[in-house]
Length: 250
Length: 250
Image 1 (cartoon, each protein chain N blue to C red):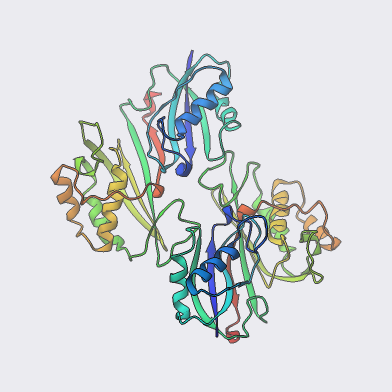
Image 2: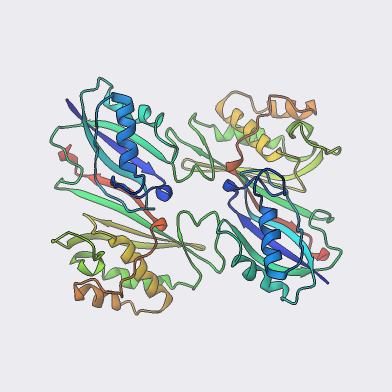
């Protein structure tokens, strides 16, 4: 028996998110099925991030246990022959049988939220960004984002339907770049609550439009409860870029 | 009666190209239908470039004649309310009744062909680029591309199913840029034969892989007939970026 780790990229458009659920096809389900085809075993992968319906990833992480004789590094190639084109295993390796993708001392997750800010939408961008026609003031958005940095109780930036009791998280960094009409919010943290990055993005868009002063972000954060003031941006703008684990833990 | 010009962007993935045809939905058909909804008139647009099935555009051009009282500049907005999300009219204006999008003395068309060159495909790139896993030598591709520049008989770089008798075209410029795994071939010319940019791209990919020496491009060009040596790259990597008309002609 060994534990194999997968680094997974996907276009989330056609999936009901990561986690297996009764009404709709998910990434996890496609991986389980391809692993069964490949090994003959009933395999249920454990994922690091249970991304929402429509959210994309370039580096989600999953593990599974197997008795297969396939070398761990070969799973990436073998799975890609069986997976649909919009799910790709970027690489695979062996980890210890205790290694769990969500329970590690040192985890850094990197998300990017993409905005297309122009007068007219661009059909070649709409799959991977949210279109905003009102001019966004990026400097104001950056001022607002500064309040997000650090360790906070992010209860206000969490979907109300969550089960999580501990809503304290650390945002290591959040930076906003603009290149022509493309605006990217890049957030790095030790973990994120349900919808947290999308609520941060949606609220910063309100700051950029001038609906909110940047200081409003601090007020929302201090309220420590979900309100209608923190708006959730659409899923298609969000990409889980990478999950970085501490070196000693492998 | 006035003539209105449209600048049209589209994601070609779900369309059988520009031109109306019996088996499948086309961009032209969607525009005609939306114009009928809007004006009540039977309108058939005339396009500048009849892009192939699966090819994208950011700036195709079309005209139509109408008795509608809608101001020419307002057609863009009004059509976008009726068109599907993957077709966008970027702007609209009035031109003289003699103005034809294909028959102008000065036309410059700009196409880009996108290649994703890495060991593993990226599902967030596959809709708008061709995946090439063999390392491409961009310097060799540039040497090959130099033979394409200028006025030539491009009969060898044309789909055999064309009706065109005159296969002489001028390529003003062709340049290849590389940014990490993303390689872009940008071609500017006064016009392009059926599949010409895709055959140029497919043949340059063979040069990049080392299948052909750069000089092979000259040999293929000199043959002046379609051969199996000029391979057609897939449509999804191609974008019609812009069509520039001479200033005096409006």
